[in-house]
Amino acid sequence: MERSVRKRKAALGTVLAVVLATLLGACSDDSGTSPEESATPSAGPVLAVKIDNAPQARPQTGLGAADVVYAEQVEAGLSRLMALYATRLPDSVGPVRSARESDLELLAQFPDPTLVFSGAQSKLLPLIEAAPLRPVTPGSAPAGAFVRDQERTAPYNLYVRPQRVQKDTAGAKALERAGFRTGPPPGGGEAVTERTVRFPSARFTFTWSADRGRWQIAMDGRRAVEPDGTAVTAATVVVQRVEIRESQFQDFMGNNSPLTVTVGSGSAEVLRDGRAFPGEWKRASARGGTTFTTPDGDPLNIANGPVWVMLVAS
Image (cartoon, rainbow, N blue to C red; front, side, top):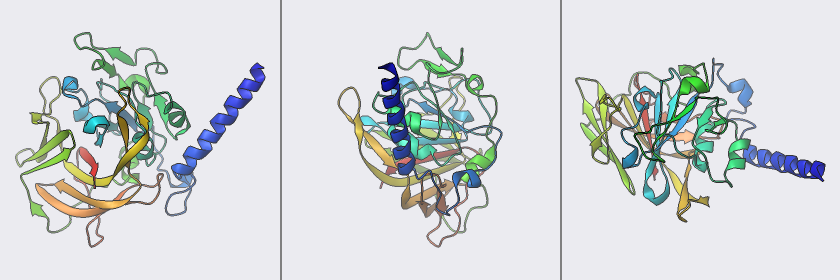
């Protein structure tokens, strides 16, 4: 009887893995090259951490050390963040929150990433286990990797110590493979001092500081800072317009979990050096990276420093 159950579970796991691999285009990228052939060698994987962005979760810890921060829509039109660490691992990151289906497609463009999250609904867990990533939760992490801040209330008090999750960083090459390439800006562009990006129930405002050469960030009207008061800034802001549709999952209150589609193409805007550059994004397959170009097809490079990507509805 036990052997029969194990066989059925193994078969189910195989089916889920095949289905997810098909959905994510794991067999090849848009050039016809296998993921193993196209992946950039690195010392370690990119570390991704799901971070709460509700007002009760602020100020967050570790955002200032992230190489890339994605903002994505979740239930009730709110936003949640995914911070990526490729060049350095901070001492602490959080508050850590749950994963979403959108994370799997988004992260597939990075070679074998680590995804740190607090948990996920039971129906999503098999898809996470079958995805091309290493999932890390409080139940699976090494001892001492997660801690609770006793001065905060749950669920806004869970933090991860990245250096106890993995020792090595991926390096900037892993970001380049996904489309984040540094270089000079294209010609033209519009001089801007401020840009506000809106989700249904959240907003981000980026204000250019010529003195610092960075975009100051405010979330829902409040300046983004680390717990010690250090400002969280971005060298580049990418406003990526994507399809957002209902997923097959809901939260515990019955709200549908939005599915952010990051494979395909659409319009984009890149903010850097105090200017706004209109452009387009394209990602032919999940295991392939995202390219950002001007309307004429020239590369839209990022500036040196942190990148914030706003995944908003087209």
